[in-house]
Image (cartoon, rainbow, N blue to C red; front, top):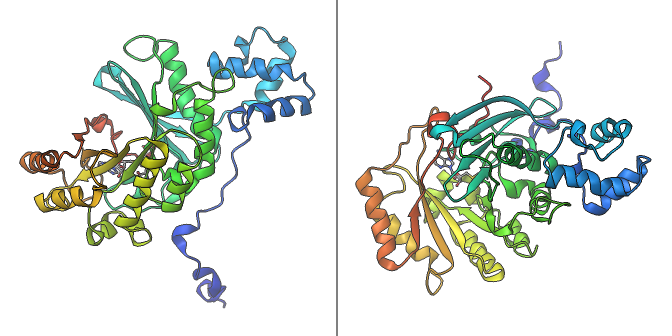
Length: 379
Ligand code: SAH
């Protein structure tokens, strides 16, 4: 008898972390295409080119994805165009709300059964949508729920955009507590490492900031791309001419600790990621956000606050803003948030030197929708 364990030893030498299972590609969608590609695709499907503009006006400006609402198009072509160009990419599995309905977490099933989450957070002066860029995540940070399940697959541009379109539509229709509104901010801080799905993420950013009706017409300044620090991608992002905010998940000022908290640090270390972030700030003239989770007795000591100030210094600290995030609980993690007095001392040490710093007001903890809690559990 052959034993399965003896066959194909070369398979087992593949680096497991980097081989995501290949699942089916999501169907092509209107939000995957540029304005030029849309005209070409509409013509290739046997329609007049001006239909592309009508479809974009419905999708991006009117947020109308139901063909029954496309009353300026002949009845016969509506369903066909919808089926060809706007296949359903996200199916709602469930929705949880808190903060009197101003925080809404959605669990979505993708066409191949993979699940992802997005969170809408309404504040008095803005609405922020936190979107996923991958189903799962391959970065394996031990404090983050998403990292525990590994990477399933990259999301497509349209799968990313559709999360925003859904929130925008519901706000527009007055379906979110607080009356009609608009999405002002999008943060790539949901599931996944956006820089590991670079092309689709940049594609999504372009769909969000392209003026209506060819895109959602958001301001690039309202968009934040958060990364564990994939240095070549940070450098590439700086050359795109997209003035989005970069957030760097630093979490430790020394390599010894960061190797443990953010495993990719063994590839690009603290000095290298901070240098790349500084270059990003210089090139784009956008202040970089430094994300730093406060974990009790792990990274919240006064000497680490001092060291953090030191590693971020480039003449001064005018190029950064440190965002301290109290650790949110995740299943199976032994770590907890810092004591109040340690958090205050950490802030004080940074402020004393003039490092711009705030403590993040965390939303959605009750519905497992806060930073690091997204695991897309169906039950
Ligand atoms: N992979 C990217 C995008 C995810 S962003 C990144 O890591 O930047 C999610 C943010 O929440 C990151 O700053 C991440 O480090 C932080 N986070 C993860 N787990 C957390 C937890 N348990 N408590 C608080 N913040 C957490």
